[in-house]
Amino acid sequence: MVRSIMMRCRECKRYTLSRDKCPYCGGVVETPHPPKASPDDRFLKYRFLMKILSDKVQVSDDVKRKILQDFSKQIKS
Ligand SMILES: [Zn+2]
Image 1: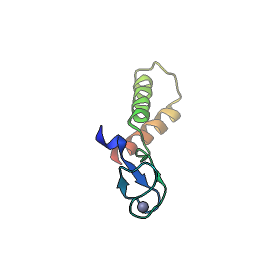
Image 2: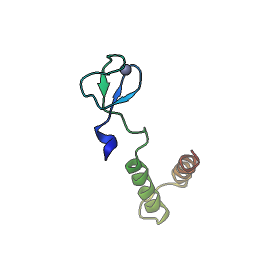
Image 3: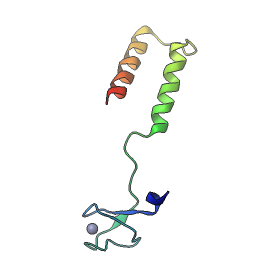
Image 4: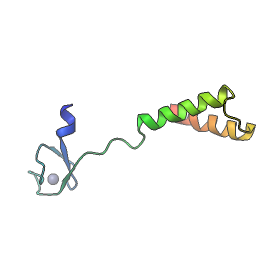
């Protein structure tokens, strides 16, 4: 992917191909971080949810409700 060779300036937040310093402001460049919630994480939670719903994992109704609430919040956001 082209984007993976891009670096991002920590100071002015501009993207650059330069690997040592920002050509715009001379600031430190770093690899752009992926968005906070990784799809993997969401996928794992989803699988866990499926296990609970299919009663492969035994949890109390209270916990089940809490997890379901948490999950529906995530879908909306
Ligand atoms: Zn910069």
